[in-house]
Length: 402
Image (cartoon, rainbow, N blue to C red):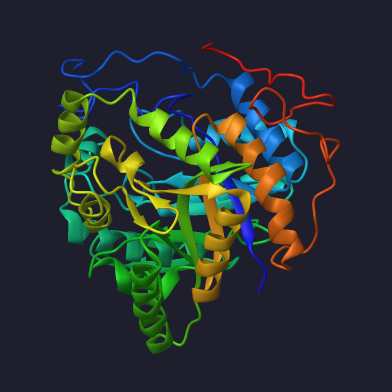
């Protein structure tokens, strides 16, 4: 079982800071009580192309593209980026409650033909009622998972190539059909830590994703989902969503992590924690419990740092250390049964190079990757404390920001 490495596309903006460009006090509508943000890069298409090309060149298999109020639309953005890449796959996040399942199945089929089979699907049920209501969705937490269950039943049904009928509480479909089913069928990634989420994952998921909790907690989740899947006669694979800060030495990596905290004043952290604390997502509450809103003791497990979660929702932990340290932790999670690693870092362009040029060769040497990706950057030393982006260590070209 080899490791599958995936990167992230910051379609909500990027930069050298953890402070989001959106406010937290009311979900991002107002700009009060938040430290002014500097060094932010707009998610324009030219910058996203740079990240996508870097990810492909460095050997990542796919890139996750988020969904939500503050992101560009994942479907449109990634199909545009597919025209600038050759092999890179796109893990497109979307919310079942805001689109017809038959239309989603048709969109996936079209996407596969346009990109020659480079679509993966990340189903996001949604854990924030405020966010859901912006899209016209007024179901409560558990009913959203019930609807996701039906949604995925319909999607898989209409991919069968013949008329499909379905009658449930949320969907009533007569003769649903994808005339030209996708080939190959996109793998479905799905995450959820609540009791309502587990059975849905067991019935429909190809890859169950968890956020970056300590290994012992991840093992508990894997055992839970694996047991539920076995009851359904299914096998589920597992993935983890993490940030990374990998450097030539552990001291450099931890210095970078601590520097990210320099932008965070107490008011910014308090505002973020207040907003994130209202989330209905069990996974989000588990992320918050890792640090309790405090800057103290943020290394919650060897090389696992919870600083990101002080102000950022979703994935709140990072692997921090030397390239060998980070490879050690990936190997540890892999031994638990984690195959897919969906990674990111601030800024995403530079951190892709740090990881790709530092950790990926180490993982390949350990036999966890099928090969070291061919790259014109191989054996080019870092210059001026930054990863090399061209022979001779020329500086990275970035769009937007400083």
